[in-house]
Amino acid sequence: MRGGKCPRVRGFTLIEMMIVIAIIGLVSAISISSMSGTKAKSEVAGNARALAAAIREAQNYALTGKSIDGNTPCRFQVSISSGSYSVKQSDTGSCSSYSGTAVGFLNGVTASANQSVSFDVPRGDVRNASETEITSGSIDFSLTKGGETAHVCVYPLGRVEDKPVNTGC
Image (cartoon, rainbow, N blue to C red):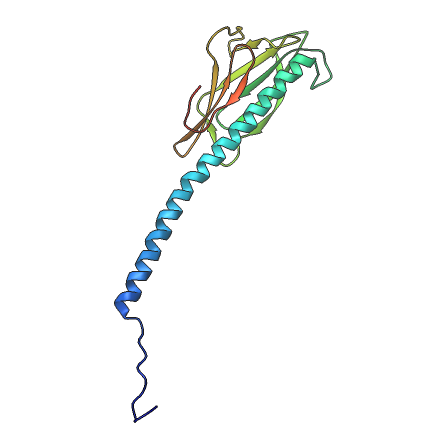
């Protein structure tokens, strides 16, 4: 302190502080809202990958003749309902009766329709829900959550593909 004067310290005004807080709030709101769509998209994509893996597993069982329940298989099927999917085996005695265990979709993801695909032992021929062999097109399994949709496509020659979210077969 020279000459009896205090040094002048400059600070922020109340209006400047309010503007900075408003900008931080706006950026936070935008980032949180964009992250919520990303979460639903990743949950749907993860469930589509799991369903595609189950379909490939059933296909591999059919091609190798592996048995799930110890009986001689004639066909393997993956069927989905709104909240779950299951890999099932049909035995040689009655090739239309299936037994298997259901696995639920995670995080509220649901299937758009009840569908199934099956593979014959030993060649892995692809059949649709009415047990007729498909020769063209594809079987499309759609999974949805919060406006996001993922597809798992099974083609006549046996290719199984999980598509990116919001693209179809």
